[in-house]
Length: 324
Ligand SMILES: Cc1cc2nc3c(=O)[nH]c(=O)nc-3n(C[C@H](O)[C@H](O)[C@H](O)COP(=O)(O)OP(=O)(O)OC[C@H]3O[C@@H](n4cnc5c(N)ncnc54)[C@H](O)[C@@H]3O)c2cc1C
Ligand code: SF4
Image 1: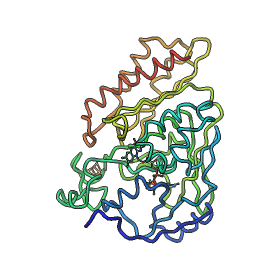
Image 2: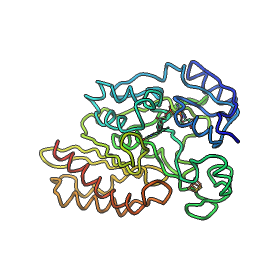
Image 3: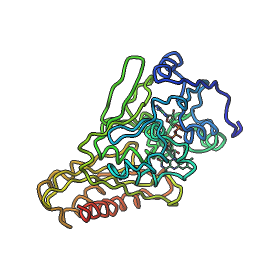
C-alpha cells in the first residue's frame, strides 16, 4: 500500500440536481469539494471509494449573503468577505484561524461542515494502522482510545460549525427526495464515525443564518499547537446580546473536545436579565470545564484541554462584555 492516491472514477456534475441524481445512482460514492481533507485521507487508505463526485463545477452552491452561505464558498472567501466582516464578523474571524492560506483557498465551507473526525490512531498511514490491527473507524474491530468494540471517540475537528451553531444557523441538505433544513445545533450527533444526522444520499448545499444573528456579538477562541497551521485542540464559540447593560441572550459552544460540538447554552440560562458580572462569568466557565469530556487522541493532554476550556470561556465572555 503506497501513499499514492488510489484510483477512482471522478464525476463532475454542474448542477445540484445532477449531483444528487448521481449520488442516488452511486450510493457508495464520496463527494469532494476542495479535497483538502478527503484526498489526504484517501492517500492513507482511509475508507476510500471507487466513485467520487466532485462539486467543483456546481456554481449554484457558491454565493455569500448575511443570511445564506453556499457550501462551495471557500474559507478564503469567508475570511475576505467585506459583507460578513460587517454583519457577522465572527465568521471571517474563525475562517482566518483555519489551516493555512493555501488550504483556505481550496477548502470550502461544505467540506468544513462535513470534515472527517480525527484521532491519533486513525490519521495514520495504512502500514502504521495495520501494525496496531486497525480500529473501528477504518478496517478494524476495536477502539484503542477507549478499549471496546462499539463506540468511536474520534475528535470533531472542524472550526466553522461552532460559531455557526452559536449564531443559530441551519444546514441545508438536498437529495433526490427534496431539500430540508436542520438546525446545526441538532445536526451533529453520534460517535466519531456517525458524527451527524446527514442521510447517506444527502448533499450539503449551504447554511442559512437567521437575521437575528446580526444583533449578537460573537467570538471564536481557538487553542492549537501551532497557531499558523493546526487543527483545534479546543474551540470556544460564544455569542451574546446585551440590553441596557443586562445579558439578554447567551449562546456557548465548546468545540473539538468530543465527537461533536457541545452546545452549552443551558449554562447561561440563570444569568439572563442580569448584568454579566465577573462572578457570573467564572461560574459559567467552571461549569463548562466540568461538562466537557475530552479523550486522549490528539496532541495535547485531555486534562489540559479541559482546564483550558474554563480559561477560554472566561476570556470569550469577558471580551463580549467589554464590547457590549
Ligand atoms: C494541514 C491541514 C490543516 C488543517 N487545519 C484545519 C483547521 O485548523 N480547522 C479546520 O476546520 N480544518 C482544517 N483542515 C481541514 C480542511 O482543510 C478544512 O476543513 C476544509 O474546509 C475542508 O474543505 P474541503 O472543501 O477541502 O473538503 P473536502 O476534502 O473536499 O471534503 C471533506 C469531507 O466533506 C465531504 N463533503 C465536502 N463537501 C460536501 C458537501 N457539499 N456535501 C456533503 N459532503 C461534502 C467530503 O465527502 C469529505 O468527506 C486542515 C487540513 C490540513 C491538510
Ligand atoms: S477513537 Fe478509537 S475507533 Fe475512533 S478512530 Fe480513534 S482508535 Fe479508532
